[in-house]
Length: 330
Image (cartoon, rainbow, N blue to C red; front, side):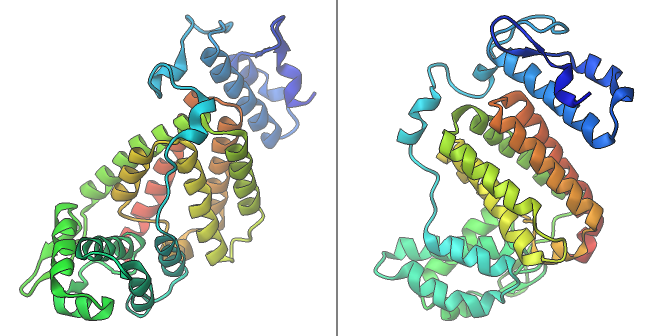
């Protein structure tokens, strides 16, 4: 019997199933994959029914779950009219280049020219900050690397003043440490690294839950397509794994339709799934990450915010477990 055979149709058309029952009947499945599919299906149904205020067989009561993630009165149909979570195109260009392993200092001159062209001095400071922050996040500017004000200004083609402002912002973010002459990229200890990932768990899982509520049908198709494309990528194609990973998560963040939240996520994501990190993970670890992406996608597609948040948290925790093992090498 297939996994769907354990879902019972109720008079109102919603499938009602007990997660406990699905687990109890595990011995009847012909494969681990089939059992996992049934368990996931049961969890999606449970979360969705709770969201629709329908009582489950093994639930203690009814819960209006959407209110846990959005302000009352929010409607998914209004999402296209909200301010989209957009970034300047040059940021995306720089991100793609750096996660592909491009040298930061060789890439920056052309990027900076586009970023500051025809803009104010304040825009220069913001461009310098974004470039340096992204370089640190991705690992192109490694821990302990000195950041000299004059050198950065020369490379970016700007004066020292906006660079100085950018460095001060990075100090406030906790990304730089004082050295004898100027600043250097700070190395987080393991406690600080854990704290960074815990912040990501809170922010990114919340955005994923909001995406399950607010995403348009077009957004969901984009997320499903991104996940499907990534699932076909071979482990040895590091560049494709990196770019597809960023694309998948960015599409989810966009679908949250919460620009302020996405901005906070980008600020607190201090360490990316970087080029060097991608070379270190095993095939089994890469497979685990993809399976977690599948679960997240299924939850969003089913409009199940509770489950979407749960799987997003688990995914970040898995990433931390792997990253912390290789931290000394990065």
